[in-house]
Image 1 (cartoon, helix red, strand yellow):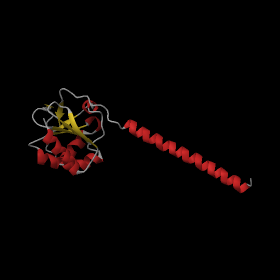
Image 2 (spheres, helix red, strand yellow):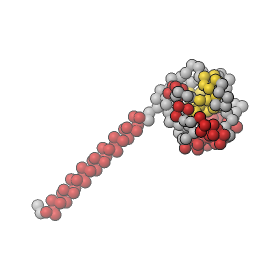
Image 3 (cartoon, rainbow, N blue to C red):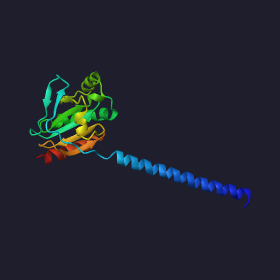
Image 4 (tube, rainbow, N blue to C red):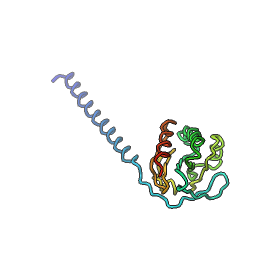
Length: 181
């Protein structure tokens, strides 16, 4: 075997080893993402009582009145900023048929920035403060924004995790209102 053939064989073996290594890394990454992004189970809280941003009073959420939507957010989340005008628009459209509560993850945010966020987006629905993260943990510590559509028992009937387009969110609202028990 001459020197050129040995060099070609060496390159071929190196290429196979490198390709195999890259493939293993890619497969490991995919497995890691799938395992770590599976939804954590939701522990349905019996009584949800949080402080309201507007006045500091504690509010107890009443699920029996009408369908309820929780919107978990932070002021610094770019996706929350993208979805805020969509949720405000849907609130204006469906406020007589759905309760919407913004749930700010204050344990990950700054109060003055939350107040500015609410003012910037002209949010009229109640914004409640999850000061310790306990409620967020009960809802599986999902990414945000996270919308949870809950029935009269406070059970989650649908959810949207992450930012999405207006039509998809509105479609969930319409289906939820139609199927509310």
